[in-house]
Structures are given as C-alpha cells and as structure tokens.
Image 1 (cartoon, rainbow, N blue to C red):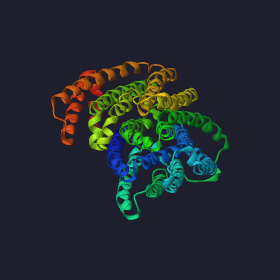
Image 2: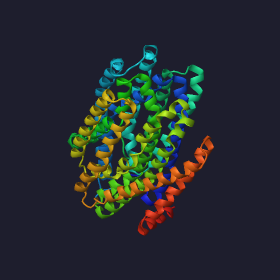
Image 3: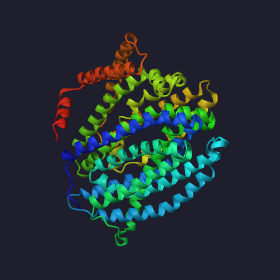
Image 4: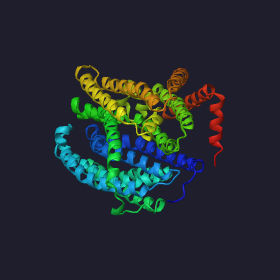
Length: 505
C-alpha cells in the first residue's frame, strides 16, 4: 500500500479542503435557492430536493455499505501485524455490482409511481419525471463511485473528497447560469445538470483510487465470499440507521408537499436550506474526524479516543450554539433580504428549524465510535423507530394543526433532539464507557446559546437593521461576541489543545 500520510500533517490539508467545500456549498445554496425559486416557482422548486430524497432512500444501501467497507479496509490498512485490504475491496466491488442491478428495479418503481408518491402539477409532470430519472442515473454514478471513494477515506485523503465536492458545487452554479438561458428554466435542465455532475464525480473517484491505492486492483481471485457476511451484517444495521435518519430529517419536505400543497412544499424546502448548511458543518466535522476515530479504535487507543471524541462534541456544541443563536435572532431579516418580502412571515418557522441543531448535530463522534466498534444494531433499530414515529407525528401535526408548516417544523425538531441528545450519548457510553461527560458539554452549549441570543437581541434592538449590509454587519458583531463567550467558557487545557492544533503545519 502507498505510504500513509501522518494525521498531523494531513489534517490541516483536510481541514482547508473541507472548509472550501463547505463555503462552496454555502454559496451554492445562498445563490441558487432564490434563483431557482424565482425561475421555477415554489411548486416546481419543491420537487428539486424531493427528487434527491427519493434517490436517497435507495442510496442508503450504498452509504451503509460504504461505512462498513471503509471500516473494514481501514482496519486492514492499520493492523500492526499487516492485513489484506484487497480482499475487502474486491469483495465490495462484487457486492456493489449485484446491488446495482437490484437497485435498478427500485428506481423503476420510483419513476413509475412518482405521480402517486408526490403532488406534481400536471403542467410540469413531464419535466419532473425527467428530473427524477436523471437524479436516479446520477445516483448510479455516485453508487459506483462510492466503492472507489473508500480509498481516499481510508488513506485519510479527505482533501480529495472535499475538493471534488467543491468542484461539483462550482460546476452546478456555472451550469445553472449557462444552461437556464440556453435550454430553458425548467426541471429538465436541473436534471441534466445533476446527471453531468454525477459523471464528473465518478471519473474523479476512479482516478483517485488508482493514484492513492495502486495495489488495490480489481481481481475476481481476491473475492472472498466469507467476507460478505460480516460486511452485510454491519452494513445492514447501518442501512437501518440511515433509513431512520432519513425518516427523521428528510421526510418533512415530502409531508409538506403531499399533505399540504406543492407550493407549501416549495416554501418549506427553500426556508429549510439554511438549516441544511448547518448540517453540512456537522458533516464537515464528521468527515475530518472519521479516519482518526476509526484508526484510534483499530489501534486500541481507547483513552485517547475518549478524550478526542468528548472534546469534539464540546467544541461543536459551543460553535454551533453561537451560529444557530445568531440565525434565530435575525431570522426574519435573513428571509426578507434572501428570499423576498413574502417569505419574512416564516421567520418563526425558520428559527424552530435552526435553534435545536446545536444540540442534535454536535454528537457526530458518537456515531463514528459505534461504527468503529461495529456496534450499530441497537442504534439502527432505535433510529428507525424514531424515524417512523417522527413521520407519523408529522402527518398528524399537519392534519390537525392550524399553522401546518410551523407544526411540521416543531415536530421534526423535537424528535431529532430527543434521539440525538438523549439516546445517542447514552448508548455510546455503553459502547465506550467514559463518554458520559457529553451531557455536561451539551449543557455548556445551551449557556452559550442563551447568552449569545440575549446579546444579539440587544444589538438588534439598539441598531438599524433596514439594509442588508446593516443586518450582515450586526450578525458579524454578534458572532464575534459569541466566540469571545466561548473562549471564556473553555478550560485552560482545552485552549491549549486548540493552540497545538493551530501550530500544526
């Protein structure tokens, strides 16, 4: 295998590349959301994320397999007595080939029944079907690419994965600006764009696989049927977990579309984009820390793993508390200047979507510990139960409630907090005893959230927020004050740890 790059030298590169990916995604969301909303209309725009959700329900198979395969290949790469990741790799390719054929049938069912699954206005039905078809094909590209992406992840080359995401986000923006005037501002064009970036992603992952792990060659002789069982056992429960996550976090747009109206689904999807950016921050941290946690576990560095994971939760909780607090205070102004005056009335719904995220997203290291320890069955069952209950309560809420969109946002937020803030830490403490301090760290985040919200509210009341520049400036001032509050909350040892990270070159 190619020589492993040390974590200390690679982590800054990974961090910079991941930050660039996040910034490109943020620009993409901030720019394209009002652009698409204006040109497509709320009803058509709401189908764009819904097309992605439909393919996500099939893609959970790929994601769950990737998590399991990455775990097994990483363990083989970092075994002190040597291992053979080629067996895991080729066995995985065999599994992916079989599952690609199986998933083709699932996609056919989705496309054939799209009009029954979603509320699609007749005048955009054809364009919507083209969009869903292109999204399904693009997913197949991503599915094939995910087995090759494992090389970059296992070798801790997150910079390659993040660099590709940055390129894809930029490509989406460029293609949208070019193709909308040329071939039309419609859902078909969005579908063609998704297909294009899917092809680019597949090519890049194949190239990175050949460069990073030249010894991982495709060979049917290296297929070991005995390896299929442990991979499927682990990935099966990861699959159940991800299905539960999708039910908990991604079905709200579908509920708005199906049980309220197509326009309501578009409004809800657009308003939800900022909370999606915050989730990307959590995913960014998840991507950076994943290889480290898996390697620590594989090398039985359990004490270091406890310290590292707990600190990650604490830092994430504090930083997310500042960000979500500022967004809540200025939610009405953000919607007014970003999406338009007609969306300002959804400020409270926006705040409900955003506020609990500092509690529910900071526990990402806990999921990585469970994956590294191959203890995913209980979490899978519990997450699926939470997901089903969340979906059921969401349908009931919009059926009985007066302000349907507001009730929908509240239901999803409450269920996510209960699952991630209470159940996940309790179970992880059983998997790796000694991680129970997480509750204490989350409470510190609550203190920072309240203090930042109070300071931000005082600043907002005492200053003029009639212009976009003024709102942006006062948000920045509030963020700086919130970071100062975090610095006061941190213990000396935690500050020293940040200093050490900052000195890594």
